[in-house]
Length: 187
Image (cartoon, rainbow, N blue to C red; front, top):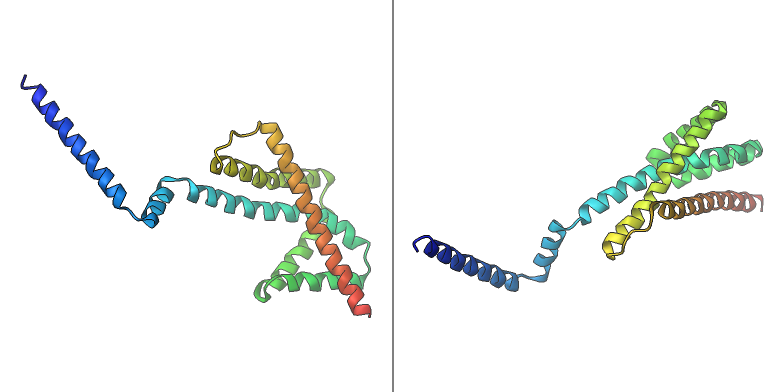
């Protein structure tokens, strides 16, 4: 009988502490509830993963667009190449603009001298890294909206399509802005 009394008193103490927790949670402000939810949620981890994946996608997007720009710049005359370089310098902030144009021109030279197998390997790796951003975005939306994830293959096919659309859009934006600048300067 003596063994049951302490269990009974611990149950009572457990109920009292549980009641206190409920009282404290009732008195919490909405901002405190949000902070508690953020602390216990994966928001920060998902944001970090998306930021890292976005940076990797920017690098891989540059690798994917490099042969396109290489072919495009090879067909342009010297004035058009110079105008493209100037537009590239204007796109970035002034402390970075000269370094970016130097890196871009050096990468074009290195890429043009690379073997076809190295070019193919670089492009495949860039496509893989670039499509991971869109796959990760879909996984994050699945977590946020409590949806079951799509099968692996379908998710990555959609991600490759989104990457292709992003590359096309970037290429067309750059092409149209350089053509517009040429047209504007010729007037």
